[in-house]
Length: 198
Image 1 (cartoon, rainbow, N blue to C red):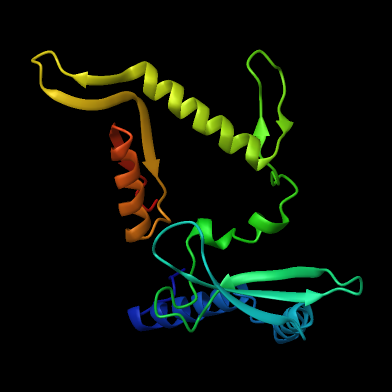
Image 2: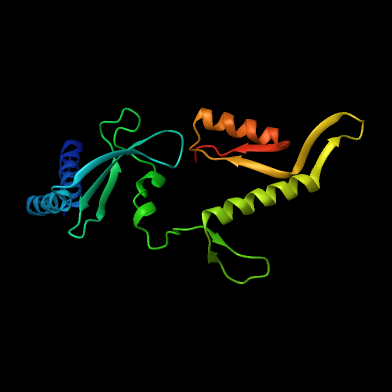
């Protein structure tokens, strides 16, 4: 019994046809399914208000489109956040952090007020912003006072504190970064860092 002869051209034709069929099936080229998905997407944001914003995670400035709808009780419901396809910065694309921007507003794990755990306490409690800002100011002052050095070992005037460090956020603009650096240097800090876009 002899095996059938398969030319290279026949092999490529069969392979290409099989790969095309597999790809089409895998990509969901079922017209009925595609139409039903399209209808679902249209219903979700149909009649929604379109608002434009900027992603808060880093200094790149990717544009976002948020879809909202006013509910019967007068509150606003956030339906969807996605990249803005008209933006020259991101052209509708978002990094993994930007793609999760909706969780900033709707995550059940979101902490909505400052939390404070007193020394020796076993749990956190909600406190006011005034309490937190006063606490930070007190801690900065006490740390600076305890670690401030006016002269080094050679008698040179240094006026610095190594007891405090500062890390800037990646969402800082150039002006915010400049202001933060000037403020921290005026306190005598030498350990300054900037979060890169990650």
